[in-house]
Image (cartoon, rainbow, N blue to C red; front, top):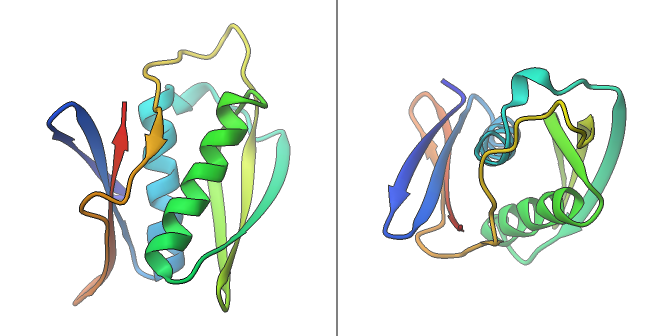
Length: 135
């Protein structure tokens, strides 16, 4: 399982899973975009690389997801695959996807990524992230 969606009051959350912390971050991004649209029809024709910094891993996760959300809302991209690398206090993400067009099935709108109940945790079988989105 890559991620799990959970409801939280008027918001929605994602728990991302991964064998590595990078994979958990990537699966959290995939989960966020699965809230936004049906990802089965998304072609991986365009590669976009983003980089963000943060004081800690929680801030890196929020900043990464916020930047990806910015690319969706203002630049019109939808991504369906993510490759994450950590570099000290920075994270780089290679995103594969395409511009949103009429053939995409958009589902919901995310207003912002929150710090509410955010968690990044090493488990026995890998890593787990938790983040809540204001919808």
